[in-house]
Length: 218
Ligand code: C5P
Image (cartoon, rainbow, N blue to C red; front, top):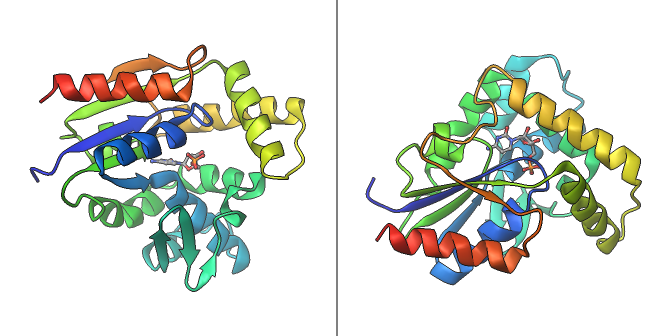
């Protein structure tokens, strides 16, 4: 496909989601929040009381995911699950089932379909390495664990959830560990990715940097 893709990968709470959304807005590109697909699969599986060790059953859930994205809202069937997929339990379950090859395989084709004109900004863990290896620009957005925990804390409090800093730090570390050590599509920068450490810069500065790199590719 000639349709340009900007892949933004990185660990949990590195600011990928915010940066990807703003870059997409600035370029009038489509947006793929691939983490939401794993979260939707997790939520759907939790609700159906699927055995989390049953890879085949989980892959079926992923394959038949009846989801849609409307503006900043995410729907499962007719239900708006924008908030529901953000809770920690769903994030943790998503990170567990994301280690299963059959689940990743089941979500593969769905992700490719987001590549439509005039272009796509895709955020996740394996956008530049596995899903869109031909992306025009690949960015690996990182930040220190402390900076990410603080961001996640503010995000949760801002949304009216309760949060505990120690729990968040432990959770981030556990999730990083699972995401980087899994056998399939582990979190790692693509060989041709630009590394951007967002610990000490604002989201707006990160957006400007991504846009400059993209402009250089034209
Ligand atoms: O980015 P987000 O926190 O929403 O992703 C939830 C989980 O989904 C991550 O912890 C990760 O394990 C998984 N994920 C993945 N590949 C992606 C996006 C997310 O494995 N492309």
